[in-house]
Length: 114
Length: 114
Figure (tube, helix red, strand yellow):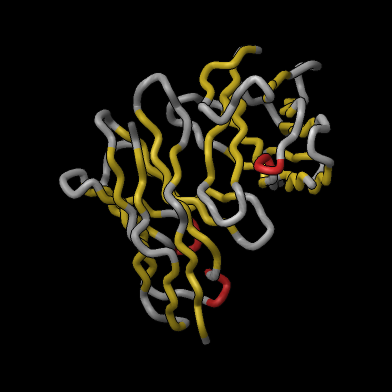
């Protein structure tokens, strides 16, 4: 039984368009993260989110990116104006505990920017 | 800053042979160490983790890893591999401090041949 699901599984968009990637945790989790993996490259941290605010973000997470948990359940990543280099697999990750807790990876959303 | 080095990009091995996937890390603070596995077109699944205590950690699917602080290594081993172990394996480190993002290595593709 997966701890987290993501929608859509694959998103194709035109450069400059906005996209919203969604993450739905199955059970109670307190800590949320987004990571991405450009094809053939490392998995990279984007942002962590706790108690309805960003707790840490990487240099990748610039003003074009935003996250929110609007209804207390879904966790979203928005890219306001997509660029070609945003094409990647985006993983939503959840954890119950900050220090010792396992981080559960969702199945990912493959974003293709044309 | 933390970093993870996986020295081998690909490791070919015959079925039922032993395998070792190497991982070295650098960090100026105490660390937690993880191995994740990624099967084709899937998300990352935790194989095992080292948080504290015994330096030999056993995980799922018969894998184990040994934390060696003096050599800053966390190599993954399995005494006898199966075809189904063919996947990409990622080593990751998380600091013991406030920041709890995972920093990943570049990954090692394990190819098990019959």
